[in-house]
Length: 456
Image (cartoon, helix red, strand yellow):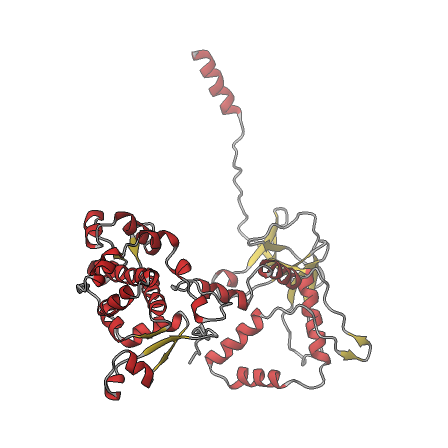
């Protein structure tokens, strides 16, 4: 092992050094060359661009165009490298001066001759290579030609020019944004001495963007379909829009359902009416109608009246935490007891009016109250005095009338016949009573469409 180690050390000592020291002479002649006739070296950067190595760039220098310089003046030429060898892209390399420290640096390439002691230096142009889609360039060229052929500017272009010259900063920015974001699908055919300007090719970027937009928006609903969907999602019972009479708009089967109607029992009310025993309930609206409907043996309307009472009891049991968020239903045993102890009926009502979490949002609560309004219309032959109903529901008259209008009822003051029917004693008392009437044709509140806010 020691012999091999000594051998490797001896071989290592025989190798020449990797770095060769360069000793410049005491005096060096520096000659600065200019690339007036022949292009000198170029340093190119390609930020964010994969530049193909097979592309050859042709050099150009911008000189004086359209005029003659005064004697003794020299205009610095700008170097431009350009190539159209790519089938779709144009590559352009320019000297970019953005004012940064790096852009102000100058780069030089030097060749030193040790025999003569002369160092030749030439400035290396630093350029940045950019690519553009050829179709975009073609569109810009066509736009410029079309604008040049216009004999006189339009009113819009005059206003735009005035806005750019004399407008404030906000106005100029709005014009710049509109110009930047404008995508024209087809250029207008403008009359010219040589004929007409043809439209841009169909494979342009603008055409591709518009084609993608058409494909993505082809399945969008129309305005009528959106309105119908919004009407369908409102918190109200489903109405029969083809009804010929008010009784066909909301039927008992569509409003309440056969399951709930079968579970509602009104035998105790009928027995109490026959025995002429008053029935005590926590609703003045319901209490005033039990005796009349029970005496006439109108079982269907009597069940609808009890349905109204159940929904009022349902609403009174709801609780809201901290006055915010959804309304919660009490525990099952406590809730069943408060609702009368009929567990199957209570569960059916919860399935109809609560969400899957056994909660009622504001939408669900309005849905429940709108069922009370529609059921009241059925009980009172589609003309309801809302005075007692608003007190039972703990609502104001405008709030309750808004829900009546949502289900198609009309708001009016009581007539003389209606004052006699509901025992309203005077016209002064009638001021506090509002009548909800269901009439054909149905009139629902129009959906308000909020326009865009105007910017100050």
